[in-house]
Image 1 (cartoon, rainbow, N blue to C red):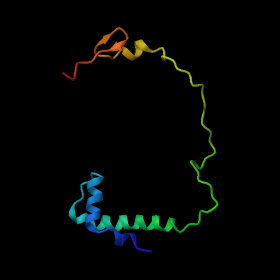
Image 2 (cartoon, rainbow, N blue to C red):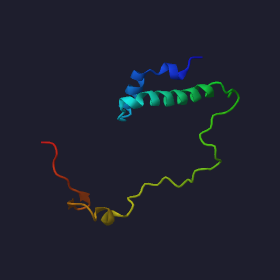
Image 3 (cartoon, rainbow, N blue to C red):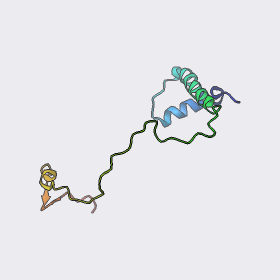
Image 4 (cartoon, rainbow, N blue to C red):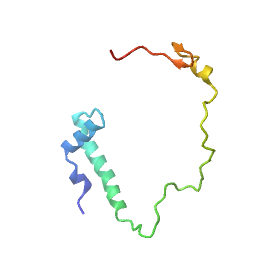
Amino acid sequence: MTSASAALDPAAVRRIARLARIRLPEEDVAQLQTELGAILGWIEQLDEVDVSGIDPLASVGQATLAMRDDVVTDGGQTEAVLANAPARNGTFYTVPKVVE
């Protein structure tokens, strides 16, 4: 098994930070490399767990979703919805033209 920390070189850490849009000072690269390597190491350890014969779970709870009838309505809130409209035409919002 290869070590996850060995797989992450400083260039990879900088790239990850850039992709995550995290400003990463150069002096923090080594620390983040160590931390990311530790995280990847934990993930590698999970691969060692034998999960054969265990059904995948969507949730660990036994909660069931509340169901309601699938009925289309207009909500009956037209005036409340349009109350904050900057401009309206009947029951529709009006917006400035954006494409010439």
